[in-house]
Amino acid sequence: MSARRILALVRNEFRLIAQDPLPIMILVAFPLIMMAFLKPTFRLALLASGHPGATGAEQVVPGQAVSNGFYIVGMTSFAFFAEHGWKTWDRLRVGAGSAADIVIGKTLPRLAVSLLQFLVLFLIGAPLEGLHSRGPLLALIPMVVAFATCLVLLGVLVTALCHTVQQANAVAFGGIVVFGAIGGALVPLEGLPGWAHHVAPATPTYWAMRGFRSVILSGGSIDSQLLPVVTLAAMSAGFVLVALARFRLDDAKVAF
Amino acid sequence: MLEVSGISKSYGPRVALRDVSLSVGAGEIVALLGRNGAGKTTLVSIVAGLRRAESGTVSVGGRIGLAPQESGFYPTLTCRQNLRFFARWAGVSRRQIPGMIERLADGLELTGLLDRQARQLSGGEQRRLHTAIALVGDPALVLLDEPTVGADVQTRGRLVEFVRALAAGGTAVVYSTHYLGEVESLGASLVVLDGGVVVARGSVAEVKRRYARDTPATIENAFVQLTQPGSAIELRVPADVG
Picture 1 (cartoon, helix red, strand yellow):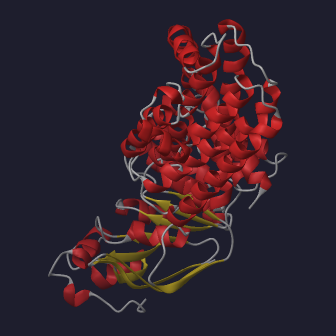
Picture 2 (cartoon, rainbow over the protein chains, first blue to last red):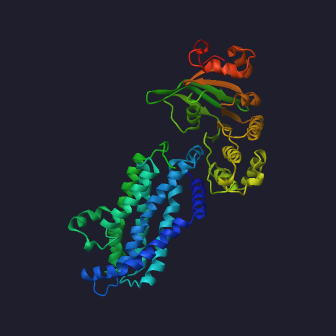
Picture 3 (cartoon, each protein chain N blue to C red):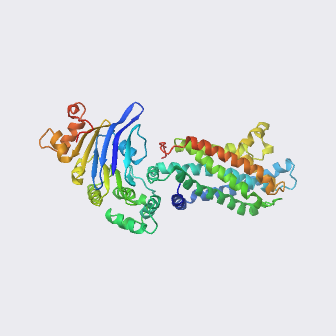
């Protein structure tokens, strides 16, 4: 593994992202619009589930950030498939770069994008929607980092498992809806059927929302983030293990 | 610089290479000839470390530069940004990069195009950028897989001249092509593959003398004799001849 190579690839990835900023702008604009639409509905849902004084922002701001955070799964996967489409994948391999150099160099910028997305959505969304947290929002930082890492590694896993960019897109965008819904990001968990409560803990979304709610609705401190952070880290480790078993540098991926 | 010994490779039931051996010294150009599917790209990929052979060994005495068959670069980046990135990836120090880019751009006539996005270049210009990327960091061995495919006559001529100069500077070159005229212009020695087997090797003059049946004895005649199904079978030689 070479820090110099990883740094070179990270810079190149940021340059490529900067050449086409529209997807990043949509990642921020879309959830902000959805927050304004969904807030009144979630106010009623939170009031009905025993949170007096809730405005709806307590669910809609973190919920939209978490569910739209899933787009980074597809973006991470696409970053790998694009190298195949541009026929640069083999050039990276011949340049003496190891698999670790390539994977780390391509995922670190997506992690940065994911964290930036959370930061911007909270910096704009919280005051815009009138979010009043009962606990310190800074206590959420470790959990947000753990969740973003988990999503980016899920993107690597999707890349390892899929052979075509269409497969990767289908899995990534399906994940947004399914994980977002079951995990309680799209709608509050209290509004989901009973079976969903049993399945929810299997999704990263559930643990991210649990972390957010424990601080925002219940006034928890950083201690309340320990279980979500550890669980998300364990999920990340699982994704890495499966990806390591399935990732093949010489896998002939079909991009575009 | 390159020693390939007894390489074999199959894709399922189809044999791509069978007991192929090859050696290329510093400053030498070896042209790989063969029909489509003869095994040229598979051989280049194995030498580059992109594919694994089922048997045999590959020994390379230095860094490899590869220009695969299909042009590969970042389309939204400029030529300079492409070259700079691949130079860093190849381990070239930051200080050496500007001079190296100027040198490559000068040799491949990319100087006026350096700050243009790669996607805005013509086909021939893209092909030259593609070749330039393979040469960043002064590799000891350069693998060019059909570098002039789709290029116009002028571009082909420039690339051939550049490759000759490269070899004159001591770089070992493996040059896969379908253009037999280029082989003579390059002054390359030949390795002819057919059905994954080396059917001839040697200088252009030797191959013409041995295998060209028609008059005049041209490299085209020799190639057709060597690779025509049926008619060339009796002409095939063991891999170690030549």
